[in-house]
Length: 228
Image (tube, rainbow, N blue to C red; front, side, top):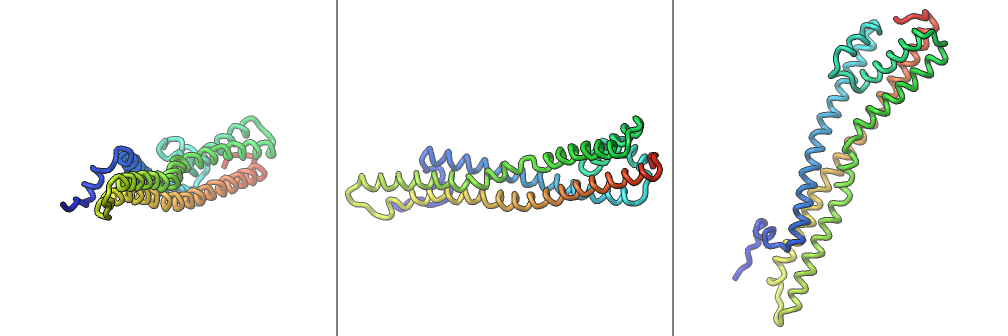
């Protein structure tokens, strides 16, 4: 009698431990794709917002007016806009207290540095999960494969007349675990590398903006001593 070698049959006939391995890998794959889709949207939106805000910032708009606009729009208070809001709020506070320029600049830079770090942490969120899935999934799949092949050869040793047909289904179902491990790992690794690069670029954008904004505030304080 010819063995049923369909994929569904191989999965349903696999040992309980191999089935658990397959379920873990399936869950890891689903989780990684959810993170991949969500991070794609988040990073795309962050880049678009950074470009839009910087265009507005460098258009020559009055900084006080821009600050009020940012405060009124809670949905845009992230990324570069959030860094600007924190920095300008600190500038207004220190300026109101008539703090000298050096202390004012140091205070503004510290505030914006904290804001930059928080924005970077937000961008980095869940990327470590992609890295984890990408690194451990092949080994989980390999464990299922080793276990399945071991069971097949143990069963083979218990019969007097062995044949390849007897172990082929067991080996095939075991190799499915390896395939599922790779299926979960490869997209996760590719997405992690790609998104890590995007996060680095956005981080550089945030840090550069913070430095440029601090320089503008310093020049403005030296020139007029008033808010533009």
